Image (cartoon, rainbow, N blue to C red):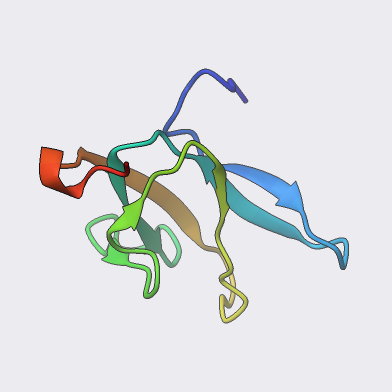
Length: 88
């Protein structure tokens, strides 16, 4: 894991000791988290509900995907916010 790679999905341990996916954000960027359930359909990426249009604050976002069953792959897509959408 490279902490300087801003779109790297990594895992953190939650309070119950379970591993959860997470990613670092940058202020004034917007993020969409997508999931792929298994490797059978590599074109089957879909937006993860609750994790579209996430506004970056410079903090780590922990992805709460407790409904996941089986193998799940995660990717994060980043877009720069328009000037009027930026945090003060």
